Image (cartoon, rainbow over all chains, first blue to last red; front, side, top):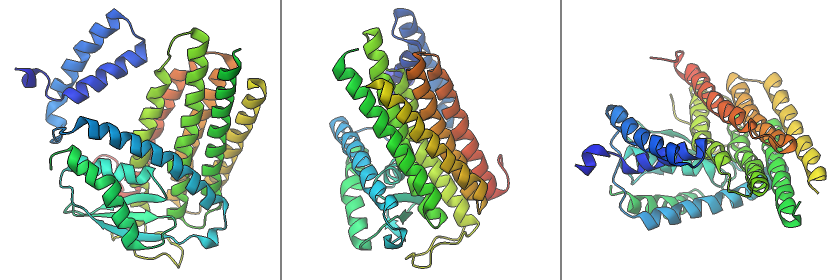
Amino acid sequence: MMSRLLPFPMLSLLLWLSWLLLNGFSWGHGLLGLVLAVVLPLGTRPFWPNVPRLRDFPKLVRFVLVVHWDIITANVVVARLILGSPRKLRPAFVELPLELTDDFAITLLASTISLTPGTVSADVSEDRRTLLIHALDMDDEAELVAQIKQRYERPLKEIFEC
Amino acid sequence: MDQVVEFLVSAAILVGGVFALVGSIGLARLPDFYLRLHGPTKASTLGVGGTILASLLFFSWQERALQLQEVLIALFLFITAPVSAHMLAKAAMHRDLKRREDTRGRPWKQ
Amino acid sequence: MLAIALPIGFGLIVLALLLNLYRLLRGPTLPDRALALDTMYINAIALIVLYGIATDGKLYFEAGMLIALIGFVSTVAVAKYMTRGDIIE
């Protein structure tokens, strides 16, 4: 019954919270937001890809905190690289073999890579096995791949069952 | 105005402004498209993040109540910035844009 | 203190916008110009948010939100057009 009414509980929660943020916290908007949070996921259900079940919520919180911290440090590092001599940069295209299989998790990983130190995800292969990354300043390919795997891919793999 | 809040708001504005500028400097001076892509995706996002934090603090202090609306803009930008960077990178690879000669590895054929 | 920080903040972001304009006009390729526009709308949001603080107006939040939505959709549309030669397949 519950899963019929709320196919995507996290999405519903997010919708409800954004509605309250947009319109201010009051009882009326709380109720209206609640209706929307139930109706919208039901109505758009056919358009959603298979969203994996969240397995480990505390790990997700930790992951979000780690990523935010990395975004801040990444910016300082990138700022220094940008203001320094462009000749010293060692740009590279790197192929990252993926262990994640789920589309949603891969999207999250690609977004995380784009937001963190000197790397932008450029493409995913047709078979979803490899991610193409462009690095602003790469020292050693194996090291970069290992770092991304250890810091972002493994937690994501543990957070979603896939 | 309360000294501490005023200081924090000012600091957030300056940090945000500096990062926005750094991102744009990267866009203006780096030698090839793929390198230019790095500045805006990160620095500019943090630039907006800084100003939004400032606005958040400022209005929360003024109205004596937590004002979280601005977070929505930051959240939206954080979700969309990687997507637009990804799409632009694909477009660049499709057009086979020139990259600096010392770039290791190669982009994929689109 | 805020009276000093705000004009400096405005100055920094206007400078950033000018640099984006330079890249927009200079190119040299279409993706470069699209990227310049993308950066420009993000910086414009920062400018609007700052303006909201300066004039103490809460309405500017809505303007910022709208620009964020429209800017993202247009960047994606332009990028898609450049890869596929078509926006809606």
